[in-house]
Length: 138
Figure 1 (cartoon, rainbow, N blue to C red):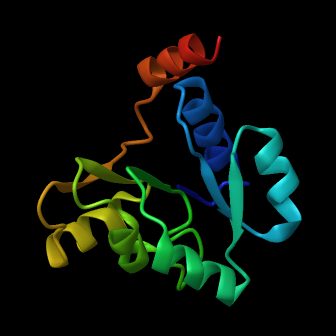
Figure 2 (figure 1 turned 180 degrees about the horizontal axis):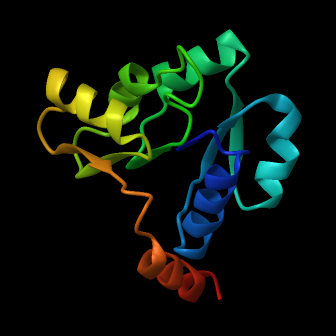
């Protein structure tokens, strides 16, 4: 699941997931951006502005990896509580966030249980990572 799939980091995550061979890539974004996200490799999209569609995803879907580019992107935006529910419990799962401030806070206060883990990215030192992403995407 890519939360904020239509933004710059979100689209890159969709493309990277496709390049790595992910079987299912779900983009969470507004309906007006679904075509863009699907064209970049998502297998389906969910409209975060549609309460019924969002609730159905939280109720029914589970993911190995959640890449969250939206939490803390604007005041009051917080996908962490639902993100914890959306992670598969029986596998080693990751909720990846580019917001280390929120990540550290929520990891400390609401530590993920079992094999679920949270990953924080330091976006100030990405040279080697970008080289690897370039290699993967060709």
